Length: 296
Image (cartoon, rainbow, N blue to C red; front, top):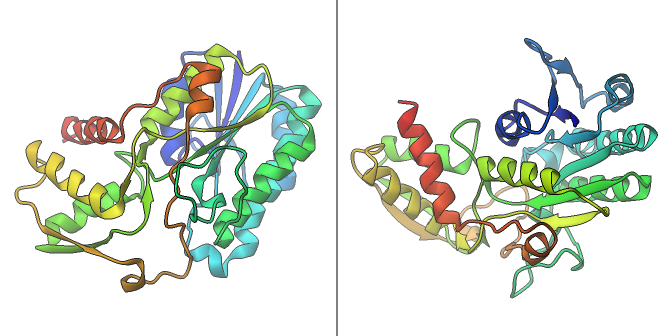
């Protein structure tokens, strides 16, 4: 199949370059179009349909997004332009060339008031501008009538880019004590597994349009994630010593954007429809830390 990957330089995009290359012809588009990459400027949504029309792919995988959650609170126009208007334009273009659109969304479309993992059909109620912009992108894709697979993921990290894992490792090397929020719960999910699962989903085939939850198995809070990072990184020699990691409340670490207190996603539908069984979140952490060891 011919696949167009949008956002090939992001955390998930860089992993998708690897995983999607096994499926057929892969064309990668990025904002700056460096090297052999095509140009896809999400700040100019009206420019995207021409790219899709020219390439005429079988599948478009959109891994581009505005992900600065706190900045979005004062930069809503940009967040909605990239996360809603651009996907709307892409979806319309996909419909014109009969391409399947694979698009990533987020756990932040939910308000976090649930007491059990969210199902795909549960009521959405984003607490932030970022969450609202991603939800608007989802709806625009559904309204377009194009064939699509919307994949909601959460707490994404990788051995590259900007993410919680790398921030914790940097701070651990600089400080003796860290204070980390312990009352927000989710499932840390590696970009590497997201990319592998996406390729597996495409290999299986998407017979009907829909939304699926794509996260690692299990749950923890940010404090628990930080503790696991310290333990594993120290065991692998990435940290000479472990700092003290203290739990704090969200109220003690105020941020411009409100975040859901509980945003664990139920992946039963993913397993039933595609046979994809998510790994435990700890396994993804170990794999990613081993990548950092290998890169030293």
